[in-house]
Structure formats: structure tokens, C-alpha cells
Image (cartoon, rainbow, N blue to C red; front, side, top):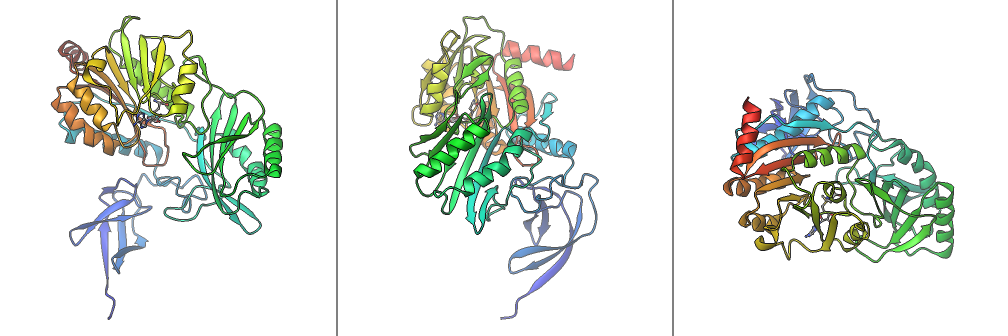
Length: 432
Ligand SMILES: C[S@@+](CC[C@H](N)C(=O)[O-])C[C@H]1O[C@@H](n2cnc3c(N)ncnc32)[C@H](O)[C@@H]1O
């Protein structure tokens, strides 16, 4: 059978959720990587696929990618877009989610963008290849790309990569594919390594020597995520500070992507609290190991809930002398119920990427008037916002934080209230 192909000229209408330019052809949307809104494209459609033959015009927001790996590495989808336009696009995504959910009369948002070289968390794939290993992020749907440069990560992490590559390539346990998570903590880089085979005695010696030589307090090993971990090397205490409180995060624990992003989130959350007495209760849901708990504890008594056993154990161990307590709870299976939530003057929630599901439904049935919602996914937010609107909440303020520079991810802090007095006050301030 003869294959048919069609050629067209089309203009990119908008960016899709993955950051690819969207054009319409024969009633359907097609997504073309590396293109920007307003750009004119010459395309060929062949076998159900769109091929970019030529970009015939250039968006004023197009810039040269700061990284020579940008076409290959799947870590960044939008390095070819200037940072101001990128932040504006992220803001528009959140605004659309709010508007579609019925929140139309909105205050101006606060915007924040983290600078390059600020990422403090890195999760890289490892792959044994002839003569060594590849250490880097996956191409879109493909093999990892060796991270020989990266404009995202902190310089300390970048500097660590060449000796790390050398050390890991000498490990017998890395027989095929593996993974490495690095959290840059106050105590130094905390490494969690996954390899297909168990570590041998000689592997452990190499890791211990690497930890000693490079100021790494801890290297942990596990066969796969969720499996039992063991300490492969420990040269000193592991710690990090949240709101001035010293916490000992578990291996591969959740940490905000950058210190700057964490600060922006923290400031937006604290600024969104209603007036509080020190005795007032703040219920914090999805607390991790205490990023927001300890700063919140300076404003009220915090009851923090978290499902990850190791994370909540580290939070609880740090609560001594602070005005916070932590409880382990799977908030999907056992959401906090309205009578429990009603004890709170304000609820702060920072759910995972998928959103807060049943927990939000229970929150909306409670009498809680004030909520600060931290979201890392506008799509999940869009699913949950209509119920908040229906339950009588208004958006008092919203902050869009681009802490995942050059990716499509967006962090948002929404300050919501259904307290008529607080809503009126916010409106008065906004309009007058
Ligand atoms: C986006 S992180 C926020 C953590 C913390 N607020 C911070 O800023 O570091 C989401 C947290 O939700 C926790 N989590 C995910 N699913 C959960 C569940 N079903 N019940 C309770 N916690 C859960 C994760 O372990 C993670 O710590």
C-alpha cells in the first residue's frame, strides 16, 4: 500500500502541558517539541506522525539554550524560551486552572523564579556502558544522557559528578542500570544508590573512601525504591535545618528542589496564615520531614501528619522543645476526619503530585475556614479547585513559584478562606 504524506504550514497556538508547541491539523492537536507560540512551521504528516521540516519564523521569546545537552537530555523541555516568558506561561497555567474552576475575580499573583544553578536535589539514572558508566537524566522516553554539564544544579553537585562517575564505574554491583539520588543537605551531599547487584566488600570500601575524600556524610544502598536500605558508608552526622530546627532527614527523603524555592514557598505560606495566637492549632498535612512544620511552629501549635514512616520519624525526633508534634498517617486510606480538622484554626496542605483526593473531600466537610494549599501540579489543582469553590472558599492570594526552571512543573501557594470577614478585608485591601 502506498504511504501518504501531507505537508502544511501552521502557526503554533500555545504550549501543551509537556512544553511542546501545539498546532491544529484536520481537527486534531499536534505537539511539536522545541517550538514556541506564534512560530510558523512547515510540517509533514506521515504515518500518523508530525515531522518538523522547517521553523519559518522565530518567536521574540526564543533564546539560545544555555546547555549544550538541551536537545538530548529530558531534564529540561523549555531552555529555548526566555525565563520571563516561561514564568508568564506557568502563571497562565495556574490562572487557567483557577478560572476554569470558577475563581475568576482574582488578585494579582506574586511571582517567583529560582535562579540557574540552584537545584539541591538530583535523581539520576546510571547505566553501565563499555569503558565506564553514564550518569544523567533520561532522554524523553529513552536512555540516559551523560550529565557532563547542567545549568540547573548547584555548583557543589556539578563538581562532584566527575569523581562520582569514576567511583561508581569501579563498582562491581553496577552491572547494568542503577539510580542515584543526591540531596544536598546542610551536612553535605546525602547519596542513595541503587544497583542491580548487592554491594561487595570491595564496593563498600570504595564508597567509604569516596565519602571520606569528598565530605559525604552518608551513602545508603538499596536494591530498588521502597526496598530495605542499608548504610554503605557513614563519615559523620546527617542534618538539615528547617526554621532553625535541626532535622536528620532519612535517605532519599523529600526535599524542596532548591533553597530559594523552599524559601519562596515558606514565605508565601507564612504570609497566608490568618491572625493567630500562639495557642492556635495549625494542622499540617503531608508534612515530609518538617520543611514547613518548624517555621509554622513559630506562629501556632502545629499538628503535622505524614505518610512516610522514615520522614515522620525524623520530624518527630526534631520536635523536642518546639511547638509541633508529628503523626504517621496515610491520608488517602485514613484521611483526617471533620471532627479532627475542626480543632484547627488553619489547615496547611502540601500534597504529592497526584493531589489530595479523599483528604480534601473530608477537609471540605469540616468547619475549617482557612486553608493554605501548596501544589506542585496545576492539573491536580484543577481537579480539586471546583470542590473548594463549591464549598465557599475564595482565593485571597496566590503565588506562582518556578522552582523547576526550564521544566513544565509549577509550584503554587494558594491562600483560601471562607471566613466572610477575612474575605471582605482582603477585597478591601485589593480594591482600595
Ligand atoms: C510535596 S511533598 C511535601 C513535603 C513537605 N511539605 C515539604 O515541603 O518538604 C508531599 C509529601 O506527601 C507525603 N505523602 C504522599 N502520599 C501520602 C499519603 N497518602 N498520606 C500521607 N502523606 C503522603 C509524601 O511522603 C511527601 O512527604
